[in-house]
Image (cartoon, rainbow over all chains, first blue to last red; front, side, top):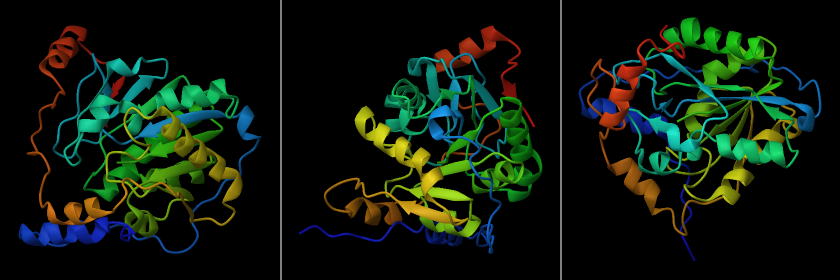
Length: 164
Length: 127
């Protein structure tokens, strides 16, 4: 019989971490009430899917993320071989992501699902940034509209978001 | 990422979000989420296990047709290991974050040289 523990509470974890460092508690965004909602316009098997990941992925040849509140974005061609993907992130253990970038940026996985006919196609461009951005305001005012605008420009039918 | 999901959805594109941080997801409240109870850094599966990665990502995509309630979270059954001791270790391991400097942190030095050789990076969007 193995012990099943409840999910790690990362809000409590960061609160404890901040207080141990003498910082004020981080105020997580709290959105009550129903979130925005858009229905899928066509069957999944006909959809163009866009990928957005916050595992700090960049492609060899691109500038890496810095670890002081970087909110920049990397545009990554989804035909990229995963051997050219790298990670740079201040807050998680990147050992597995560096061995197999699909664990935070599932491009091979999505290509498999296209080949199987589960989804129609993968958008030619994916978007990567480094999650754990301290300022919710900068995400709301700068990063979110930029990503949204680009996904619309790419005419994706559905966006898959993979946070870290 | 929840804030981005909300913005994209409000602008008219449906989203589905994988997550391994349930309390944060519940708080930020994206339109649709799919919870995988794994340590951070494996939101789309385990390394070198493409069959499992495929199951997880397919579950995130098919959630779009299954979740009808805005803010709903689909729970995936996969376990990281036979026991959940990794969770206790996660809570105990303190500050493992890297030093926050303003220069790019490359995975390896060869990448720094490649980026320098490439010059201006048109696919790097600085906001």
